[in-house]
Length: 178
Image (tube, rainbow, N blue to C red; front, side, top):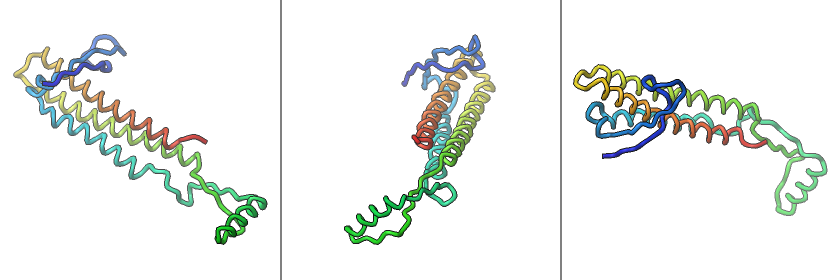
């Protein structure tokens, strides 16, 4: 039996707006009413999918359209030529240094936010599906139903919080320092 206490956001069954309520997550109690492994698995898949999308679509790879180009001054070119001749390398008369533009990095950060919102919505969809299932069960009391619904909301909030931390880390990585 696994017990955990968490402060969760105000849900539809909490009293007071914007308050936080301490919710004890009792997996044994949850497992008597819903499939906890299925609930957690579906929520974790949403977070994992977001991570995969970040890796696949939001990297700072260099392509022509997102680069700025800086030319080296003639004095610097001579220094590079000299260093190159010492190393037995041939350097062209113009050396190009490229970096990803700030605008492109900001667009990637916005895309990261969009993927986070999709993940959050997927988690909330799973939450709502399981809450709906709990509400339709007639073999549990209304009080127990509300307690279980609060626990489901709290679990969903934990997964959303995890996704939000991943978003913040990715945005920091993408925007970086100028």
